[in-house]
Amino acid sequence: MTGIVVASANGRIGIEAAVEVLRVGGSAMDAVVAGTRLVEANPDDHTVGYSGLPNLLGEVELDASVMDGRGLRAGSVGALQGYQDAIDLARTVMDELPHVLIGGEGAARLARETGLQPKDLLTPEAEVIWRSRLGEEAADGSDDSSRRYLSSIREIVARTASDAELTVAGEPPHGTVNFLARDRHGDIAAAVSTSGWAWKYPGRMGDSPIIGAGNYADNRWGAAACTGRGEMAQRCCTAHSVVTFMRFGMSLKDALTTAMTDLAQLDDPYASEMNIVAIDKDGTPGAASTTEGKTFVMMTESMAAPEERPRMVVPLDGVSKSTLNRPRPSDSESNP
Image (cartoon, rainbow, N blue to C red; front, side, top):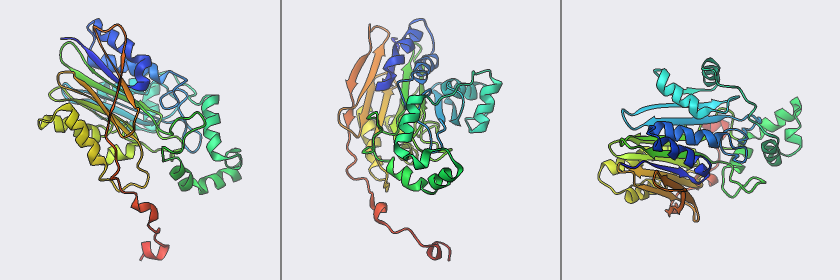
C-alpha cells in the first residue's frame, strides 16, 4: 500500500516533508503534523502561524486541530497567542489530555507546560497589512484611539468578511492550511492550522479547531478539511458531512458536491469563499471550491515531486444574504 498526502495549495511548502515521513514508515498523523509545522513557520504565508494577520487588537491568535482516523481521536487549540507551533499543541491535547479543545490562556498555559518555545508572531509586514485597513486614527495606540476603534468593531468585521475585501498584499482576509494523509497501514489523519480571519473579534474561532466542521477523519470512510469562511463550515459541519456522505455510499466527487450544496442553504450576509480537500478510504484525492481557479496539491510516496491539481467548482449562487437588508431591532423591540 502506497502512502499519499493531500493538502491545500499553500501546503506545497510542507508536502514533501510529509511524504518523506510516510516513506520511512511513519504514520499518517506524523506526516500531517510534519507538513503543517513547516507552513506555520513560513513568514510569507499570512494566513497560518508566524506572520499570520492579527485580530482587531493587533494580536495574532492561532487555531489548529488534528484527527486520527483510527479510533477517531482528536485534539485542537483555539485563540492561542505567543506560540507558533499550534499543530504540535493540538496533537498534545489529543495525546496527553482527556479533552479535545483547549482555548485562549489555557492553550498558552499548556504550551508553556509542554516546553514549546514562545514567539512573537506579529511580523512588521503583517502589522503593516493590519494597519492598512484600520486608518491612522484607529491604530495610533492611544487609549482614546482604542475607544474609537472598538466602537466601530462591527463595521470593520463586516467590511473584512467579504472576499471582495483583499489585503494590500492581494490576499483574502482569511485562509488556512489543510493536510490529509493515508499511510502504508491504511490509517488516515487530518491536520488544520490557521491564524483565522484577519481583523476578527478577539477570541473568535472559526471551523479550524472544531472537529467535524473544519476537520474530520475516519479510516472506514475517508477524511476532509476546509478553508474559507469558517462560520459557514461550523453551521453545516462540512468536513464531517463529506465523510458521512461517503459512508452512505456516495463517491468522493458526489460527497464533495453535496456538502458544498448544503452551504447554499445558509442565510448568511457574510457568505464568501469555501474550499474542501478530501480523500476516500482508499486514498483517492479530491477537492472542491466555490471559486474558479483554485487548486490543491497531492503527492504519493512514488512521486518525485508534488502535483498541483484544479479543484472542482461548486458555486453557491443560492446562498441567502437577505439579512443584509433587515433592519436591526431597536432597544424597545429587542427588550420588551
